[in-house]
Image 1 (cartoon, rainbow, N blue to C red):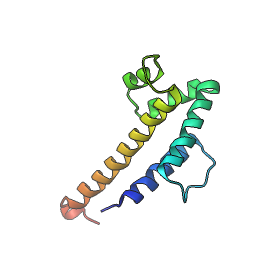
Image 2: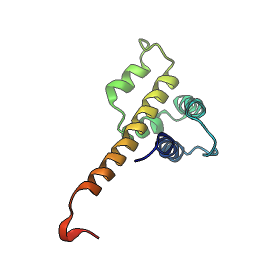
Image 3: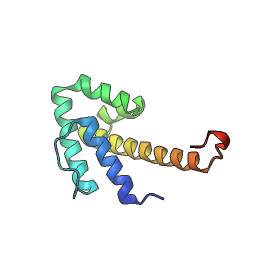
Image 4: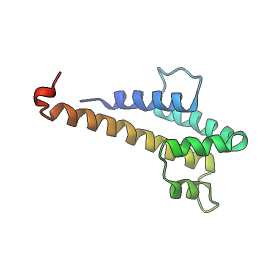
Length: 114
């Protein structure tokens, strides 16, 4: 069973890789990572919006959620709303990987087991 710190470590690594962030991975808590992500998203909104939209699509962030985050009706600034969506999606991806690993271990592979 993975601990919440292991889950956060995987989430942090995925975000650092996906966004090409040049930051130290160790010793950072979720709040610090979130602030860095907010800054990165704000930069991308200003200078690389096409890349950001492509990245959100690749991360499988739902389009209606992106549209709401970018709309004037959203209570949060766009960079913060998008960073929240990204953090949540990356956490979901880590959990799915963990669930898949657990299910694969639990299944009897019979003659196919290594």
